[in-house]
Amino acid sequence: MKLQLALDLVNIPEAIELVSEVQEFVDVVEIGTPVVINEGLRAVKEVKEAFPQLTVLADLKIMDAAGYEVMKASEAGADIITILGAAEDESIKGAVEEAKKQGKEILVDMIAVKDKKARAIELDELGVDYICVHTGYDLQAVGQNSFEDLLTIKSVVKQAKTAIAGGIKLETLPEVIKAQPDLIIVGGGITGKDDKKAAAAEMQNLIKA
Ligand SMILES: O=C([C@H](O)CO)[C@H](O)[C@H](O)COP(=O)(O)O
Image 1 (cartoon, rainbow, N blue to C red):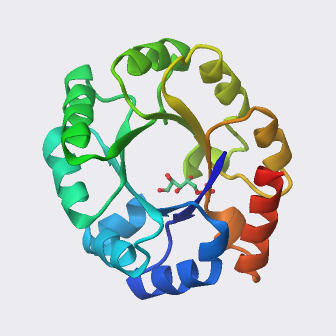
Image 2 (image 1 turned 30 degrees about the horizontal axis):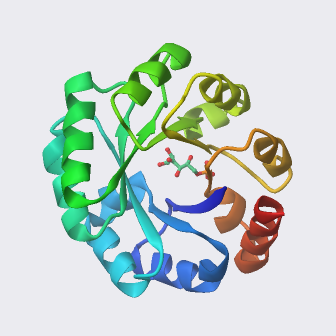
Image 3 (image 1 turned 120 degrees about the vertical axis):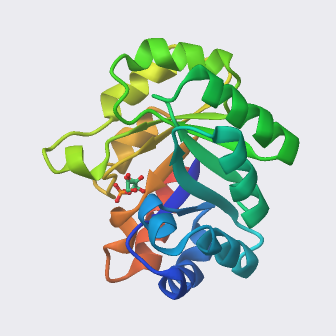
């Protein structure tokens, strides 16, 4: 199991400062969708240049023009790029093909997919690297989480790695760990703490225990 730090509500200098603080306790750094919207792929480039030893994920949530967008994110230095599970199969295939060409990985975000079990089976067959269940900010706000969905996809996925994101905190981490996803994505559970280093360290300790 690996720990991914999601950076969503920062600019580039703040992102670099935050990663400096917690780098020894995280495996993957996510340049979140809001950061890409505000700063562009320059955020991916600058974070990867500052921390070449870390895996950098570009959370583009691609919906179309997938091969081209995966190519541009790869050129910026992303190691993993996200696409939406709701995208057309042609887009998923384009993303997977381009990522393979560039030596990168594709993570599919299942946000807003209704039949997650059926779609996870299809995505697994399309050769994606990760399938991620995700409760976005707007559904977190009405009390939802993705713990059940993680068990659902884990019961059918044969080849892809599994991931979970959305509102995971220290208090809920043990329940997530029980389901043994390959990747646990945490944003506010670390970035919202006064002592971010201690929060990341505590989470990494639980994950690696
Ligand atoms: O993907 C995310 C969200 O849609 C905003 O772009 C977050 O990175 C993801 O939800 C993890 O952040 P937290 O929910 O704060 O843990």
